[in-house]
Length: 162
Image (cartoon, rainbow, N blue to C red; front, side):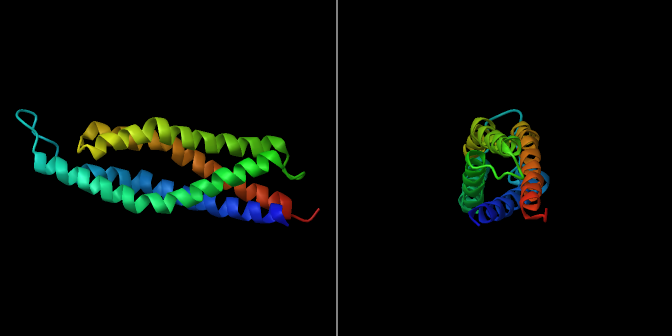
């Protein structure tokens, strides 16, 4: 019974994060480029535009963090639990693959997206930063989509009549 609940929570969390990832990839991150105009090529940057961009970023993080932390924590917990206690119909290889996908997302977030967000936090909203953020997020979007498919398969494999 515990396994069924773990698999249901995993599928719900993975589905939520896959949906959020696609929205962020296609809509949200590209819109960062419209927050403020890039500073002029010659001369000093417009500090009011930089402040507006930094303020927008801070508000974005404040609103986004609670929406993603819970499902990300659920994904990490369920992936680890299933890797330690793999259900027989699923097997250890599939549960380890799920854990690797979670690790990819966490490492990508910590090593790539967090530094890019730090640049945005400072008001550095240039085309290169935004393009790097959008491009690098493709890996997370793919990993969360794969996690969702894997989680659905795991739940089906355990629930399907023998």
